[in-house]
Amino acid sequence: MTNVVETPLEQVAYIHDGTLEGLLTCVFLAYERHEAPEDIVPEAVYEPRLGQSALFVETEFQKADRVRVGVEKAVGSDSFKAVMRASTCDDYDTGITVFRFIRYVMARPKSARQIPVLDELANPAVADLLRLVKHASNEAERMRQFVRFSHLENGVWYSKVNPNASVVPLVMGYFAARLNDQPFIIYDEAHSLAGVYDGRSWQLVRGDALNVPQATGHDGLMQEAWKCFYDALSIDARYNPELRRQYMPVRLWNNLTEMQPRQARRGDSLAVC
Image 1 (cartoon, helix red, strand yellow):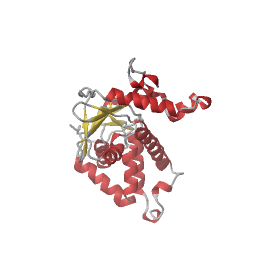
Image 2: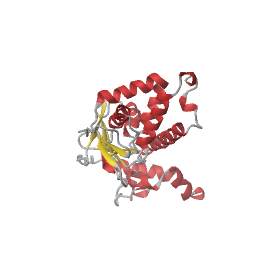
Image 3: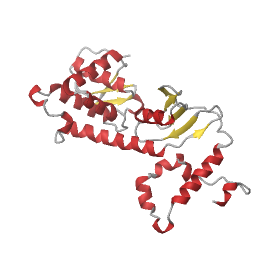
Image 4: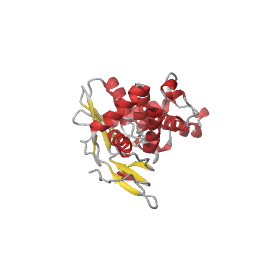
């Protein structure tokens, strides 16, 4: 529950549940209480500063939506989409960066609103937000490139990922369009968040662990086929491990089919690859 304090606090951190709505509730509360918090962070990563007070903020969707409406009315829906994308980042200062951007756009004079706020690259409040947007966009693009699915016995396609930002919400629409009516799950192990698609619509589910059925009998064969295809495309004379690490970060290899040890047995048709 939200702590009730009569007077504004000088050094305070707002602690929320890690959701976008929780962050926006903190922004609303800062206006309501006339405070300038030092930090706005999820409870799971909060690190108290010396002499800092902590205010635990309960998420209130109506207040979060009022912030959304205010931002969109002031500077348009594209700016709020940038806020949403930036909020997925893991940086400790993500929350305070979003707060400072919203505070700037809400105080921006009407005479300046002819210029899109996201074009004000020299403004620190805008530049810091766009830095987070770029990071989240890059991480989402890596997920679109490097998600690898396994086919489970229950007919669901399953992938485990470990991105550096909570970008599963940003890529679910892409994979839903590609897989069409095939149900799938993308589980973000780093952020304990699963995107679940049932063949018609998708939703987000939070959980520290996900128990899934075994892969189908032919899934291993298909993975070996993919490894053979990957090897067939390589050109030994142009092997460049540094370039590969640049475009395919090592931190992603653990979940990439083509980077796993070979499983083919003697007698398998793929053992000759």
